[in-house]
Amino acid sequence: MANPSLLILPGDGIGPEVMEQVKRVIAWFGDNRGMQFDVSEDLVGGAAYDAHGTPLHDDTMAKALEVDAVLLGAVGGPKYDDLDFSVKPERGLLRLRKEMDLFSNLRPAQCFDALADFSSLKKDVVAGLDIMIVRELTSGVYFGEPRGIFEEGNERVGINTQRYTESEIDRVARSAFELARRRNNKVCSMEKANVMESGILWREVVQKVHDEDYPDVELSHMYADNGAMQLVRAPKQFDVILTDNLFGDILSDCAAMLTGSLGMLPSASLGAPAANGRPKALYEPVHGSAPDITGQGKANPIACVLSFAMALRYSFDQGAEATRLENAIEAVLAGGARTADLMGAEGGRPISTTEMGDAILAALDESL
Ligand code: NAD
Figure 1: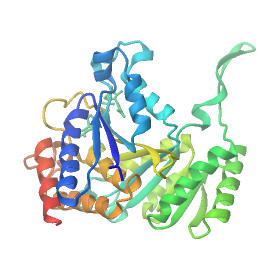
Figure 2: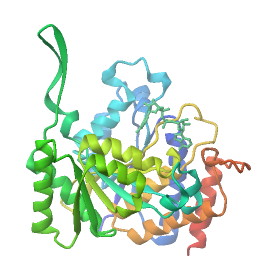
Figure 3: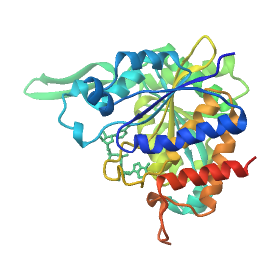
Figure 4: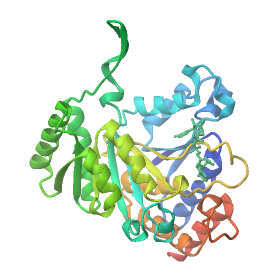
């Protein structure tokens, strides 16, 4: 059987710096766990614009559609701020998401014990937290028509339309139930069925998908405003949260902050399963290209390394190896290693991006 394939797109700013550490981790799994990937690398964002005059070359797009998973660093930076909208670095990322039809956005909020003090919430509320938000990414109010600013009488009116078809809800619901089966088997679906028809349909379709094909998964429904309160009050009650594009945007950022630093947050965007059963998939850290620290060896590579752990689990069915990598990171943090973004009030010397990579590899060695 062919090796699983991975396209690496380091991108701009700290993207290449953090991706360097991920490449070392990928090599470690090849050397020590017999996991060989066919890895190719290409340009995206400003780097692709500099080379080709476009933030994503057609050949790169074609490669992304062929491989089992894409791993992206970050795109953008002040150098590209004045470019025309059509060739801005972010357009490269948006094109990938659109043409790969990545409708299911997975944002974990996982609190490593050693960083529990970083949260703005009390330590006992967040210690051990491990939840996953599944956000519908390609429809809803950010895309619905009509939209625009129109004249109405003697004033203007701004309009956006929340629109969901049954099939759009169905497919993202399936992705949440599948995910729950690999975790703690619980889904909480959030909408506002009390005031929105799209919410009523959302609730009906999610319930139907559950009853027909996932009766083994525990399903609950919650109004999204209550969901926001519960996330801050008692986040550990959740396993998988399923929600639409707009509510997911807000709830996932809220959940992310439960865990502390932007340098720690991975994400995945999944599409429909291909012929080999693997979903189209793009893995990337939540953070951007961090121009303020680019080239200084200060970037925390953990978000990008954890994105690779998600790829191991969700694209390559290597949950145990993903856990090995997450445990290695937990051990590194428990041992006190901190990049600058993780320095708390206790002070100490921050370690560099490469030193954090060294520490993760050493902890992986320990795990054997
Ligand atoms: P950012 O995430 O790049 O940085 C915000 C702050 O967090 C900065 O102080 C930065 O130094 C810090 N930070 C981010 N990642 C870090 C890491 N791994 N380790 C240590 N510190 C880290 O957001 P921004 O400053 O708003 O945007 C900068 C550029 O990135 C812009 O061009 C923006 O458009 C782009 N951006 C890209 C993506 C993406 O590629 N997905 C996401 C967000 C922003």
